[in-house]
Image 1: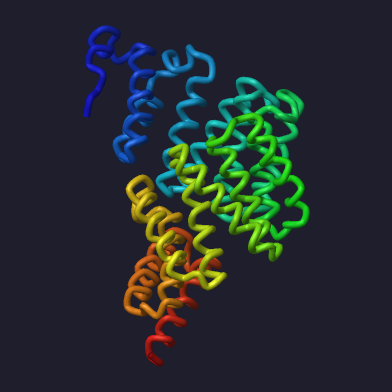
Image 2: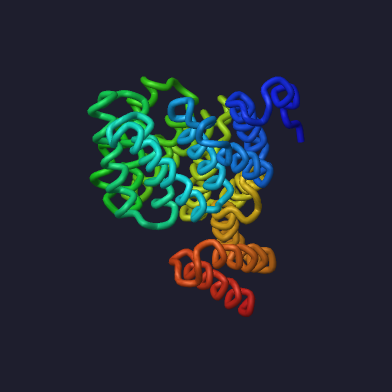
Length: 328
């Protein structure tokens, strides 16, 4: 692995620029999903003497934030939460609670709480971040819109679709105006609105918006974890509408796209495979279904524990597939 030897030779391992170069290298390695190498590089940067790393304002907190994001994207939510909390404490100590970098760190902690299932705690933290960003940046600033999007998503996850609908409708228009077509945040807002349409029984509207959103993502080359969720949600809608071959095709595509980037044991991949297994059961492809369901179930137990709702749903799907195969 390239280690920026010219920087080491020119400045030495105790110079700030050497550690900044290592941080850049860690980010580049992480983009290639070489997570273990990235972790080692981030740890080396964070082990730098305080007299070196703390000479540049917010650098330690920024490194922690980057490190936490890679941990989160690798599926290690416990480690990500610990690192994000350390980043939040670092920024709060330096700048107080209402400062841009502090609010960004607060949002990162909220995001990991959401992923771990603490929806109430996550919503409270997102609300604090949103109020802070409105006060500092204004209500239509892109970063404020991102936080409002996170709040709307949580409303949906907590069953408050009617409350979320006008917010998401407005957010789609605001994100398009602020970011332009093809931006990931536009896709996130549109995908969330499609999900609400579906939950409210507006299936035609939901399907049309999913198709429009995915077409724009393909046209602009959008490829990021949230875009994977949009496609898998579309596949779930197709399955619900008994468009099973197209649903299976979308599950297969999103699993193939996401697996190299996220890794086979990432919670997203496990969830997608489990949903795909249900689709295969409906298609009466029972052996394939049971393979997907059983393998993903093992990973879900490891990721979430045996008492998590997703794990219980997975067990029920296995039982359904086994019973259907026995009757076939």
